[in-house]
Image (cartoon, rainbow, N blue to C red; front, side, top):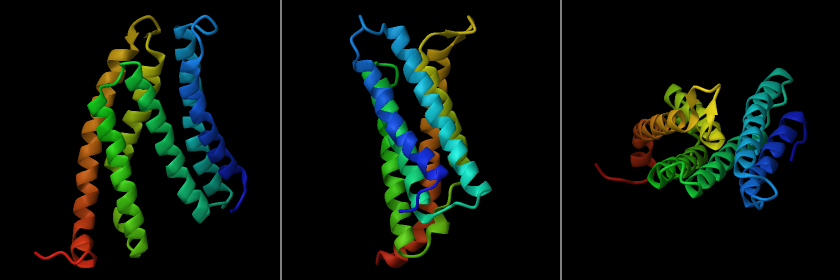
Length: 194
C-alpha cells in the first residue's frame, strides 16, 4: 500500500466520518443540539475539503496510485452514507431519498468493479451529470446538518431539501446514463440474449 500526503488526507477523511455521526450521541447537556449541528457541519466540510485537496495534490505531485484511486471513492461514499443516515435519524432527509442515493452508490460501485474486471472501466468514467449530482449532494448535506438560518435569511433546511431532491433526481438520471453505456458490454460479457 503506497503512503503519501494525498492518501493520508483520504484516510483522514475516513477517520472524520465517525465524528459526524458520533457528535449526535453526546448527551445534550454536554453539547446542545445546535452545537452538535455546528460541530457535525464543520467536520463534514473539513472532510469535503480534504476530498478536493487530496485529488489536487495527487495530480500536482504526480502521486496518483491504484490504491488511492480505490480508496478515494470509498471514502466519499462512506462520508455521504454516514451523513445521510444521521440526517434520516434526525428527520431532516426523507428515507426514500437516502435509499435512492445510497442504493445508487452501491449499484454503480458494483458496476464499475465489474467493468474494471473485464477491462472496460473507461466506459463508466464519471460524467458531468455525476459531477453535478455530487455538487448538489455535497452542498445539501452541510446545509441540512447546520439546520438553522444562515446569515439570518437563508433557511438551510429548506434549501438543503431542494438540493437533496435535485441530487436524488440526478442520482437516478446518472444511474440510467451509466447503465445505458454499460448495457452492450453487459449483454456481450454477461451472456444475455436479445
